[in-house]
Length: 539
Image (cartoon, rainbow, N blue to C red; front, side, top):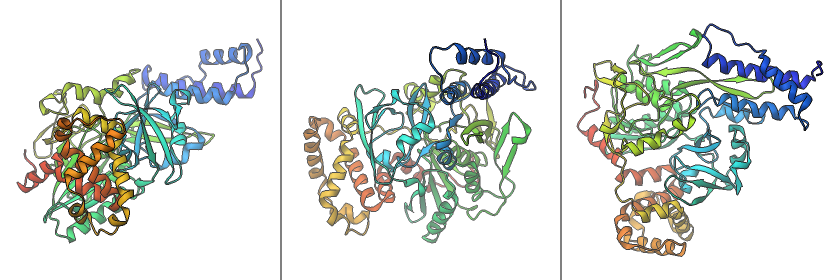
């Protein structure tokens, strides 16, 4: 065997052995023990490949393929981005792909939709959280390198351009195709803000990006000028973003010296507690925060800070449970290793991160599905609370750790009106397509309307819309079943009108119509009317 190794092999050995050392150090060694970056087994294997393997080996490919396999053994959110994708990676810390308005995670070589930006391109197209992307523009994802960087490259594109995503949806046997129109919607991270009633301002936050704090304060200030004495902050479906932005937003509601979030890592250099400075402009307003199972990361920091300080009423369902702090480490070729280096803890000491099992990413991937099967989304008593992790809020309320934020006021997932007919037309994307067709036929009239109220007053009567939609669906292969259509009537009408309003008036038009019948919004509004969010919250 030759002993003089080519330079590429020396580099491969160094890089792979270093990554292997990180892996071994994290899982098997005493924290004080340094990993051996000159792993003799790795070196021996690579020498054999270089000298004895039947085909020539591309060293770059060998490195790129090995790194994701090594990182898979760490946690679900540590990831690697090649040099070509490093800029978009830095700009979007929680994996959101702005062009399609979705947060994606890759588990077990499958691309999963984790969260959808409400009223964004994927939402409007009909894609749902939990969908698995199996084709991109007809190209099977099984044939591509399923790394974050490769997915970014395939899904990103110019505003207004279209792509077709084929998805596998849980409980539905057919592959579903959706046409997504790319739109960098998340440049504006406050989807909508308006007065729900004469006293209540509503703010929908879709992401915690660099500009979100400025947009947030501007929205609250404008609502206050319109008479808002209390606020409803909607974080449902918000997959997170920058921790610092969540801290700034929570600071607006807290008196001086209150803990907002604590970061603790393996090394003391990462440990830090963020506290309020007492300069917030909205310390005396009642606040309700809406969350669901897709609210993650920075959303959970914000909700947890206000809950543990008894400052806001948390309404909805248990949040996702993503509490790993990640740092971007630049590698010599400008690629990025996004490595989990610490965990978030709420002011009471709760860890936000839900459990994940070493080498069992399917467990983590299916956790939300397990919540559905277990009944947690429909019954508060079915929430799997870890009663060994008991914590106390500032004024003595009991809260639990173990992953995610459990709401103060639980609201079951609303299944009223969901029938097999509704599922079929939604899965086929017909509600969206019908709404777009309606807009195109009536655009000249619609664009002359001043607001959504005028739009609602002048739309055809509901019976005519339902009949026209049933005929449209029949032309597209969904047989009318009027018993089920009538049961789903309100849901179908709300969805169609909301999509039309989004097309004409933007995201705010969508929220204004959907929230009229939204059970979580209405529950929070009733609680605010009864002053359940008055500080300090005691129930």
